Amino acid sequence: TSIPLDEKKYGTSWMNDGVQGGSPAFKHTLNYFRKYGHAEKEVKLQVAFGQGQDSFWTNCFPSHLVDQFSGDIKKFGKVLTIIKYTMPLLGLIPLRIMLRMFFFNKDFGDKMYPGNQTANVPCAILERLFDDPNMKLWDYDPETLLPNLPLMVTFPHLETFYSDWAADLKSKGVTIRTNTDVVSILSRDSKNGIRLQTAPFDPENKRRDGDGLGMQNKNPPATTEQYDELVMCMLADDAKKLLGKASTWKERFVLGGARFFDDITITHSDSAYFQKNFETVYSDELCAKPKSKQQEDQIAFAKNEKTGPGNEPSGYRP
Image (cartoon, rainbow, N blue to C red; front, top):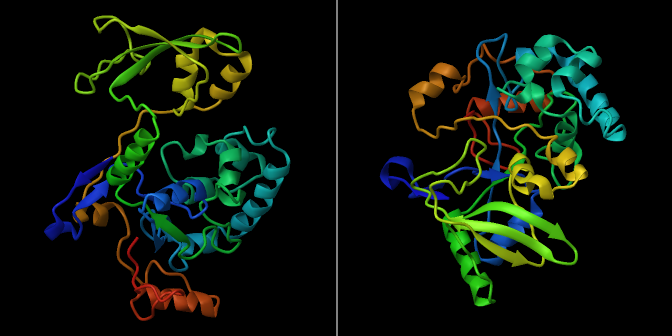
């Protein structure tokens, strides 16, 4: 969950392998961090996409692309409201189809919402990320789409947190089993409980079948176990496969509604790569003409001439 770093080179001795932080709306997660003495740290989020005047935009200062799509950005807010009150009808529709239904400019979707699979994201998820008080990442801004420097949090040292959490659970009689594969769920009913099969799992061998779940062939024999209740904390498609014939038609429908794609995430510190593929330095060429005192302040912040709204250190550094 966490990996060591060269503190002299990076200024810190560790980083979390995976999710680095999230929204202050994740109250349940943050409460658990604090309970075990691992509080989160607040940060102001800077994002940037694309390159050059015709493709670049950021939430740090005004850009030509945001000016170009100002009408679509305002319309987007109205569409979010429509999606909210017409779920699940519109909520299941992919973003790419919704944009065509409401006659958005094609470049608005391509340039303002980049990403390998962004176009396939259901509208319900997009609406929740803007509107749901328990799930949203940021507020919708009718002028710039994303707010300027929204408040986010970075997670503490997760390996230490999980160790402390596990120790507390064990002290209360909880048994934690790692390197154990749930091979299959045999049956589920209110009278007899849950019957499932487990088998030892060696992560170094990475023994998996084509569907991503454990298999018995050429592996240690599985053991049948009995439980009163079962809570599955896993991806929807894996849960559907693991439940198999023990699933209900409603579970198959809901769990089958999410599509997952193979992807590779590379965490690195190659500044030359970032400078080649992204706009990492403020330039007057990238900046649009300010339309308000607020935007003038944003430009001054990006140019290291003024601190941020919360006196955070100045400078554009997405």
